[in-house]
Image (cartoon, rainbow, N blue to C red; front, side, top):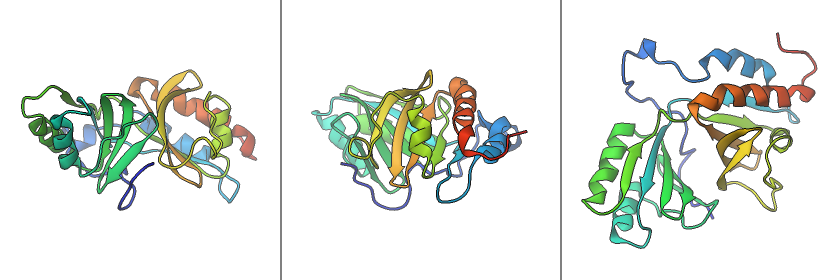
Length: 217
């Protein structure tokens, strides 16, 4: 089960940009207006938005070794032990990627978090890599969100099988993603590689089309 404290780990955070802020552009900045236009308001609607620049750190270690305990102390939470599990505390959410691999999603500064986790390795076996630029995050939420995903996701997304706090690697359409359900609403976060984000966003906009009453210009 997920163990979360405080509000929305993984929410967008103000981070120092690698270069001049005016030159920084998210993978889906060119589609923000189309995503807003595709969103359907109301209790039976669905909305789509990008949450860019979330800190993401890939961590690998033996979960049974002392190095894992040191990593947990830095994160303030246990490392998930089973497929689909997430854990979280404060600004950090940890998702399971494999028996010895996790993706940390955080509101904290990326370089600072990665440095702290590398220090926790203390020469032990493992790796810590800041992969924040590797993916972006899409949020799909609303009463129709599950129906939209079911058009192209092979998972059983019924609440009896997949609910808040679950996060797994899967595909939506032809695009590999990390799919994380955050709320009962339902609300989902989809984390595609940045190079696939445009295709995925357009696929989702198209899948949302039946719930609109007017076409997108």
